[in-house]
Length: 328
Image (cartoon, rainbow, N blue to C red):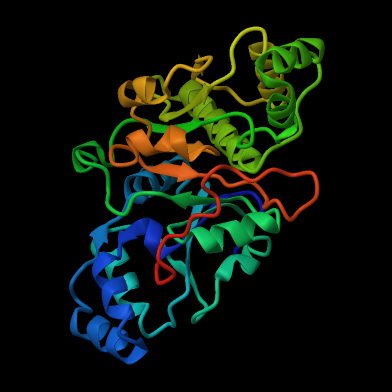
């Protein structure tokens, strides 16, 4: 029987999101031969944990809800070849991560395989790869930091998985953002109030949100038969929306049957103020300015919009900036 993916929450993670590749990238600039020799020399030396490592650990931990038929699948998507990828896979084994599947596409971005593998989230530190994935309408985000956030080791493996999302351009599409850009705040608020009963169209992270909602429901079923079980998935909405624009967002999430445990309608208050208290294991936003203040403390993921070359769509600020091309 083939291993089915359609009913699982599948994350595709690049090595640059899972591990800190600073040293490897520096050697890669010297050429492929030097890079291969370096990885062979250090093959038994585990790579340092990267920014998304704590999130992936917590996510995989949810598979204890259904050990025989795991709810979560994490697949490595790497631009290495299989030989240079050996150190990567050894590092995964060293940390005890149950990641058993990998795709190695030597020198070529692997995002073309996202639909075939039912991936609802592709994480990478390579901004160009993520932008190209997004331009093909694949769900992808740029992990801004290189190393695991300070203090994350002490928080690893126990308690809740906290995932935070911005709304417009992340959970929902850019319809209302375009109104805001054109008509500014008064026009935006009037537009949303008039359409409070109309659910938004899904945005790039809607599939991930729905998949997390499915796990929340599995946890509720477990709680019904096990009084000692404490649900672990906590989803937060952290948005610059304010009343009366809050109602349409709430009705949209209700329509999708997704429960957000924590909801912040901040109306322009700096998001970092609440994120430092909420401390999500990962935060998704389409505005880099909201993420920069907390990128060293929380796994901050930029969700870029489709580039301006696509008619009628607006790119997120910072989407054109590039991290080093060597980042995998």
